[in-house]
Image 1 (cartoon, rainbow over the protein chains, first blue to last red):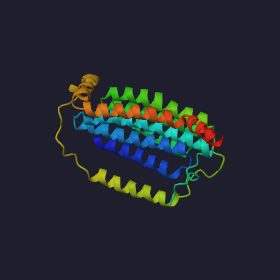
Image 2: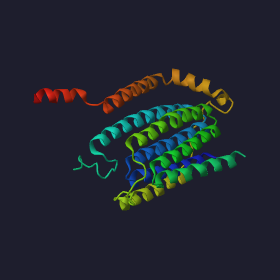
Image 3: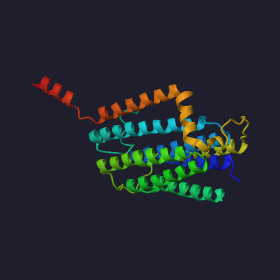
Length: 100
Length: 177
């Protein structure tokens, strides 16, 4: 019998992997992909809560979440392209002009 | 049977997610991410929401990942030349990840579901798309409009960000001459 904890543990594993990608990788495109991974893990847990609590709020929230993720990717890649045009690099450690 | 499929999808999703953050080539990473997103769509079907699975395949696999591959192609990154692709802050990062792992794991282990069940049981969810549409356009109509505005802003913002700066160039030329 599948319980909500199966889905929560899967979502938690994917979330941890995504956080590891964001914190550990240098390539900014991989960082954005890891962000997508995090979005997806949250979507799994929302859909699982929605199903096991027999409520529709989680499902609707997943739809909003996917919309926000699409907007985020569009803006993020636009920023990435314009940064690459100026700096010719995608290494996050080279992009530190605004560091205190 | 359902459990077997859950384990298959979960295993493939976790393995491909690990490969996304560990392979060196950005294009391979994108393809592994596509596999992971398809597994998530399959999990949505196991959770009795085929509408979400369709949206996941259309938007994530169809639009977002194509955008990613397009960006990889335009930026001409390819394989990372340096052996070092790990961020130099890896030691505190690993600490943060382990702390997060322990904390959320503890929460999941100790958590109990105490909320009361809603009205959307499996029979009501048989007409999945219709039910979601009704909820989205009645109860959630204001967030729906806000999100549509957000998409419009993102569209305009993306265009403005990648536009070649013709206006400023002309102004600079004018100041120079």
